[in-house]
Length: 241
Image (tube, rainbow, N blue to C red; front, side):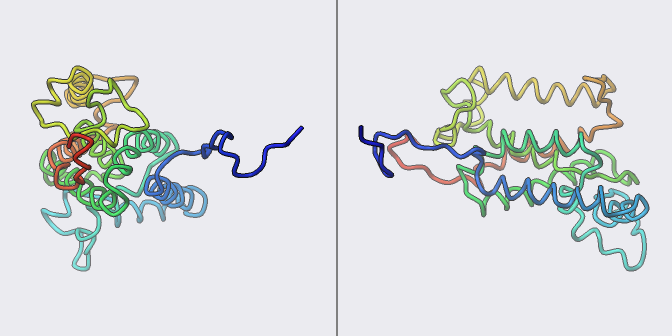
């Protein structure tokens, strides 16, 4: 009896245990590395300083917190790398893996990073516009994750009825086409409605407006949804783009 040899074309291909794009895996690695350092190597007092100096604060743009306070330069991005607890980072990581993966496969690592940076800033300043001058500190990647959700709505549901391994190959939908598609329309409406309910004080699954930055979520989602064509790539004509 002959044993199968290496390279036998009849042997089914081996799928990697974690089938995520490198950009998403790198992002998750950075988020968890930063969180673990804060969780296990920094004291609570030191973490307060980290959150103050790298978290986003609307008050920073009304009256500076000190003569040497330059955090207004980097905090619109660095806040998205910080998290306040295990539930916070795990929840954001799950949604990042689900919706960041098709976006990363479609636009590549460089544009994925560019979308991260710009959507983080857009989410932060939408938060600031709603609560201008607030001393509250915004941290977490949820605004960026929301932007990837909004971006995915422009292509991931096109004619597929839901996310698939090949969703990144779908053609980009126009905004009217998104709302004409039953699955995409339902996702957008339910997502926005959920955040608006939290905004008016309705607790969903035990989460209230005081515990979730719904302003950053909506700002990020709208940015990803509306600005995605600026980051998108042109697919081959044979795919109907």
